[in-house]
Length: 115
Image 1 (cartoon, rainbow, N blue to C red):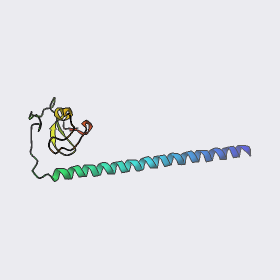
Image 2: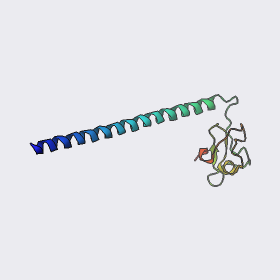
Image 3: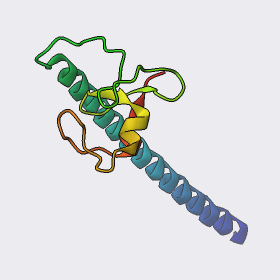
Image 4: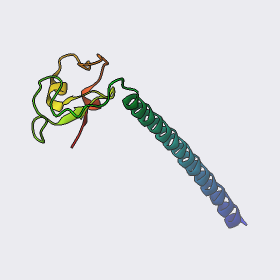
């Protein structure tokens, strides 16, 4: 009889632990889905910004700051979240992290390097 009570108590504890684990998993899954949706919306906003530019996209081969040609070593072509392009070196070395074209703030971590 006592063994049955112990077994029943242990079963309830394990069921409770399993429910807690399931709740943690579901919360993490919900956060993941919300994050994916935020990334999707941000990507769409960036794409719309590129499409909404007044001028047609020019195929520039040089940096907007130093006017050196982009290359695969020192002058990697990079883009900011506002859509403006320059070389990574110039963007990373700017003392005030403001886009040289539209003056939007950015951080070094937000600079996207093209390959």
